[in-house]
Image (tube, rainbow, N blue to C red; front, side, top):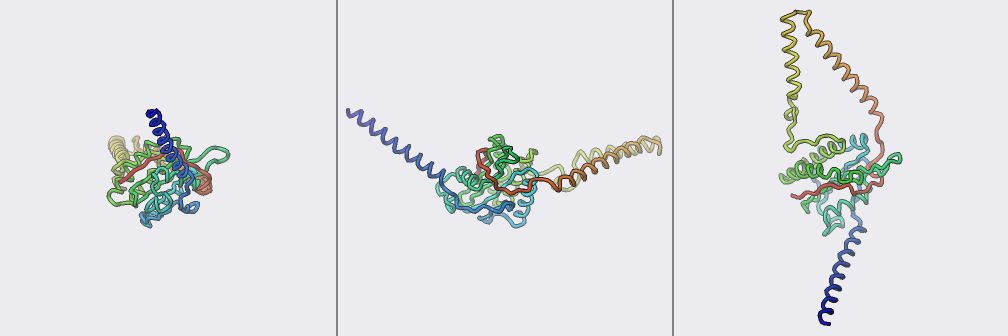
Length: 275
């Protein structure tokens, strides 16, 4: 009997613990985050003052183009701590998910088609945590890319104290991810070497054309193949420029004209980082 009494006591104690934990989870699920969302096309709530004014404008331009082109909003939020906004003791994953759903980031449907491609970048300075939260459309398919963005683009800069640069780098990479483009490399140098000079492939082509032209003129004079080659090159350039201008003019009047909040909900995965 004594053994049975002890077992009953242990089971009862476990029941209390489990019940209390579940109760806390339910309360957390129903808890509201005390944060006002930005305007439909403002994209940034920098409550922690981490982003330089020039970078705020850059972020807004990137996000506005992406929203117009892909109906995919990127919302950037910085706070001093989760406790300041009703999230004391909460994991940043939970905080981000609750905030995402509370604001309804992204458009749930467009023309009857499931959409829900919203993206939240949350930075809590005092908690030393950052979170990328994706809308349900992404279905965890981009978790690896989000990890790459967090670990290579954002957190290293945060560790150096460059919060503004880290957030801009994160937004730029998320923009590329949303467009299905290749993410930038970790170190950041491009084929143009910080924006100066030509890419190597362009330099090689230019040198090749110059050598071919010189040899052709020396051997055959004005009747050589060089003129035909250059005629073909300029025709190709003209064709490409025409297509670029045509596409630009046709797309300038179109695109998504709505805002960032349209009933979107989380559930598509993401990534968490700390510094």
